[in-house]
Length: 111
Image (cartoon, rainbow, N blue to C red; front, top):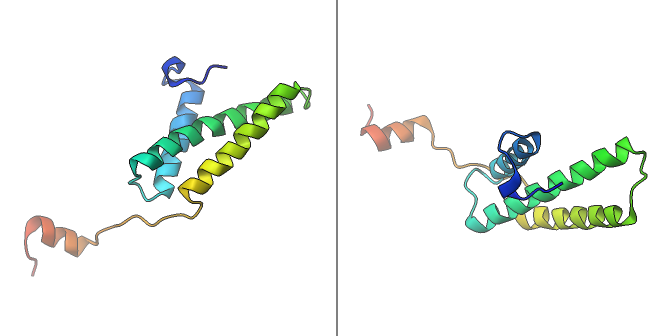
């Protein structure tokens, strides 16, 4: 299956899954990723979908797949782990301004 972004219709299940994974990773990084993190997120999302598709196929055919597909799966899984390590596996807190500070900053001093 061709997972290139140009060939994905944004309405397909795979495209929705890619966006969901990307959104989840962005949220886990605190909602404001750097350009480098965005690149890693996009690559990791594609690898995660590829791994998931192979896993579904393995379950459907009772693990009767070619050696090349197994090798691809293992390579994608290792690369995905590496991407996730580069992004950081810990959850980051998002900077949230409390209501009083927001009101003061945007609407002047409060009493």
